[in-house]
Image (cartoon, rainbow, N blue to C red):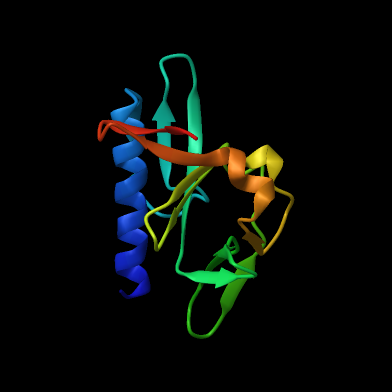
Length: 133
């Protein structure tokens, strides 16, 4: 699976999750913002950054958080800041998914989804959707 397809799978999984729990999902018209989705739980709006992982490190999924962009002449890369999104949705190659409040993540280029993030793992609920494990 190439990185573009992997990103599409992550976005699709996030949309499926939020839709299955009854939240309204909005997709920004451009890709110039530092979040991928806006979701509405009926009370407030949340900016969601979607990331994917296909690599393990120390027996846990390793997720690149940095924002990359630019052109061939001038490439840019910035650390993930927990002020640019409210929620981080992570899809891993084994199908596992996590929904992490960004306030629990320090500014970083990557995170390893070890025990610190277990509480944010989503579990399948009778095939209807995902909820916190």
